[in-house]
Structures are given as C-alpha cells and as structure tokens.
Length: 253
Length: 337
Ligand SMILES: Nc1ncnc2c1ncn2[C@@H]1O[C@H](COP(=O)(O)OP(=O)(O)OP(=O)(O)O)[C@@H](O)[C@H]1O
Ligand SMILES: [Mg+2]
Image 1: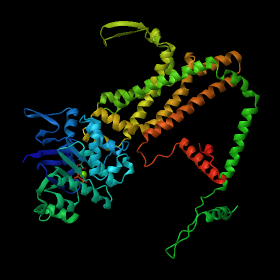
Image 2 (image 1 turned 90 degrees about the vertical axis):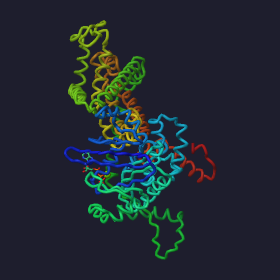
Image 3 (image 1 turned 30 degrees about the horizontal axis):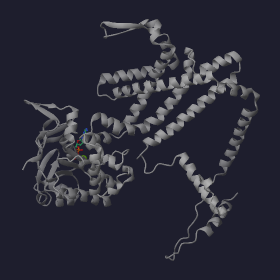
Image 4 (image 1 turned 135 degrees about the vertical axis):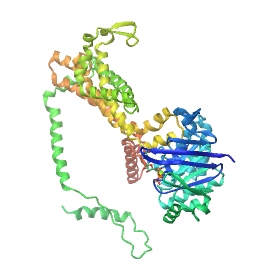
C-alpha cells in the first residue's frame, strides 16, 4: 500500500522555538489519522506543513510521492514558484477551525470557486457537482444563501463541501468542531465519518476522543513537536504506553 | 403631560383588534402593549430648530439680495454648462488616474520588499505634505524647470523630445496635479481596506490553490471594498469640489466661469449660488450612487440587507393603498402603484 502523505524528519522553528522536531509519519491511502496532543504541541503547524502553508526548515513532505513546496536538485531543495505550490495545494483539501468561508459569495459560489479558478474547469461542469456535494453534506437547499445566514455547523459543512470539490487526494481538518456550540458538533462529525466510510484519506486534528476511538485507523499523539506514540485507537487511547499520553487522555476524557 | 395619558389611547385602540388568545395555562400573563419612551425635551428642540429653519427659508425666498431672477438666467446658460462639463472631466480623470496610481502605491506599501515600501511611503508623505494649490502651481510652471521632455532609455540615448508646454497644457497640469494628490490619499484608503480583510480569507484562498491574482481580485478586494468605499466616496466628492482650486490656473471650470461672469456684471451672490447649486446637485447624485454601490458590496455582510429608501417608499405606498381601499370598501389600485 502506498503512502498518500509521507513526512520525513520534518522540523520547523519559529525563532528560537522549535515547534516540530523531526516528525516522521506515513499515512496510507483510505485511512483516517487523528492527531492528538496538548495545546501548543505543534498539531496545527504539522497539518499546515503538509500543504506548505507553513515552510519546513528541514525534512520532506510528500503527497502521493510528489515533493510538496520544493524541487530537489542534487542535495538541495529549491522552493517552488508560488504558482506551482498553488497547483499542488489544489490536490490537498484543508478545513479550518474558523471555517474561513468567503462571506461575500453564496454557498454555491464558495464551492465552485476553486475548481474553476485553480483547476481551470468549466463552471457549467462544476456546478452540478457542487450541488451534489451540498446535497451530500445535507445543505442542498442552501446553495443560494450567504455564509453568514448559516449556523456554525452548516458553515463548517459548506467548508467541507468546498474542500471536496477539488477531488483532493487527502483532506486535512484542523480542529473542525472546536469553534462550534456542543449541539452542532455532531452534525459535522457525522459528515466526516461518512467520508471515512467512503474510503477518503483524512487527517483530523481534534480533541473529540470519542470520534477518534470510533473512526480513526491510526491515532498519533504529538508532544512538544515530536511523535510520542502512534497506533490504533485501542492502543493509544485505551492503553497508552507513555506517561505523557496517559496524562493527556485522562485530562480530556 | 403624564405617561399614562399617552398609554391609554393606544391600549384601548389595540384591544378590540387583537382578540385574546385562548389560554391553556391558567397563569397566562396578559399580552402587554409596548410604548416607546418619549422625551419631552426632544419636542422643545424640534420646535426651536423648526423656527430657525423657517427663518432661513423665509430669508432665501424674500431677501432681494439673493437675486433669484439673475440666478435663473445664468443657471443653465451654455457657458455654465460647458464649465460644469470641464469640472466633471477634471473630477473623472483625477479620480481614475488617482485611484489607479493609488492601487499601485498601496500594493507597494504592502510589498515584502523594503525598497518598494519606502518609495511608496515617501511618495505618500510628500504629496500629503504639499498643499494642492502649491502643487498645481508647480506643475503649471514646470516649463521653467524642464523646457523639454525627452523620451529614451534612463541615462541613455534619447529617441526624441517635446516641448514641456506642448505636453502640459493648463488642463494637463491640472489633471496631473489632482491625480498625484489624489493617489496619495487613495493609496492609504486602499491599503487600509486590504488590511481590514481577515487574514484567514487569503489563507483559505491559498489553501484552495486559487491563483494569486484571483485571490486578490475575487476574494480580498470585494471584501476590502466595504471599508474602501465610504472613504473613497468622500475623496471623490472632495476632489469634485476641490476642482474649484484649479481656477488659479485659469481653466474654465465651473467656479472660474462664474467668477468671470460676476466680474463682468458684478452680481456676485446669485452667481456664487449658481455654482453652489450645481455642486450640491452633483454631490447628491454621487451620494445616491455611493449608497447603491455600497449595497452591492454589502452582499453577505449581514443576514438581511435593510430595504432601500425606494423599496421602503413602495411598501409604504402599497400598505397605504390597501388600507385606504379596505376603508373605502372599493379597489383603489391606482393608489397602490
Ligand atoms: N506564526 C507563528 N509565529 C510564531 N510562533 C508560532 C506561529 N505559529 C505557531 N507558533 C507557535 O508554535 C507552537 C505550536 O503551535 P500550533 O498552533 O501548531 O499548536 P497546536 O498544537 O495546534 O495548539 P492548539 O491545540 O492550541 O491549536 C505554539 O507555541 C505557537 O505559539
Ligand atoms: Mg491548533
């Protein structure tokens, strides 16, 4: 089985502060990986290095075998022109904690925008797909609404449809339910579970342990920029080997 | 005046219309009518201001000094209309050129390159420091500094040259001065608008792989427009009136032209009034335009946009129409239209 996402020795510092310290990860196709870890452990930064929203200082990120953000020439990595990076990103979905929908565009236009402008597809071809995606996240009747007319849970589902519209190889979720009222968390998690069931490759940063236990194939516990331990949820969540993991799980459960 | 006396008629009015709902709960609270607070001092203020307004209007109508017949005679004469055309032309050219250069300067100020940032900063600093009238006189007299302007490579050979005075007529100098002045202000307004857009918007666009130009034109700029527009409209209006300064270059724009006319016939006040009324009319048109353009860019900014004054008027009329037709017991469709 090939790795869709392959991180090798990824390190990243902000000034003197080393946020990621030699992270190695291999995520197989069709798997769901949940990343857990205390606040400030580098979860968001790790996710953002995968689509080059954050540049790495050392190490390599590959998606489906393609080096992300750089071109290798001998022993050196040359940063790609922005145009190339943007093209690579259009194969990687990203769902933000704060949704970041475009408030001046309708829900439908939010979903249609990227396939048309970054994958240069025809609008009339994309639009039926976008409507089908909205239907799939349960918002078929909201195509003409503006994001601010929707609840938080609905907005996040639109954001998921927007990411799906690019037919990405992998979708990255950065705490997709943390900005939501408790009663809205379920509807967003249900959509993500549905994607998992259909065999999409997902990486989810979340504090929802129940979700991790139910859906994850692999749970990765991150501490101070390192992978402390990883394995199936039954192992990492229920029988953690490391003291740090155990302390964290006890605190959030 | 007591509050209870104000409440009663409303309450008794309402009762027959609204039948009490069938109560299932025994301790159901009676429906209470809300009466907004009234401040008697408001009415004192309204009365005082109304008297002042009445005095002013009366003065306008009856004081012979305003000389309305002369006003009427010159208001739409050919020279005045032509001068108005020049004023509009100066405004349009100054605005367009000013905002185009303003976009470039704003982009430079937001650039990661320190040299571009500094140059833009220095430009804005310089042109905001020099009074417009001084700057205009400089451009008007540029031929004293540079007799001819040659085209060619920087510091290299020249392909040809023109006399400065041929290139810059008075009108050219005026447009150039207005545009350069306007650009400094426009740049800051545009930069402020761009900065007001949440960083997450560009990040999301970039995560979706949307090309750089498209990110700016489709995602950032339309949102920036919301804060750019009110300030930009202010600038256009002040530029429009600011064109009167150009009269120092003897350009026959509106203000210069009325000065010429009252120089001949000494009817200063009515002719100043001619210019004033034209400035007011055009500013009003600009304000109405601003309202609708702002509405356009407000899409999605709130859950529902408030109705426009026209829409409000139409619903009022419609409501009035139905209520009168009901009262009269006939269909008065004409009123509703
Ligand atoms: N742009 C930045 N500049 C400086 N420091 C940063 C920047 N982004 C993140 N950091 C720091 O890097 C560390 C890791 O941040 P990151 O957002 O990856 O943590 P996280 O695990 O996602 O935390 P949380 O659960 O709170 O979201 C934090 O200490 C943070 O302050
Ligand atoms: Mg985070």
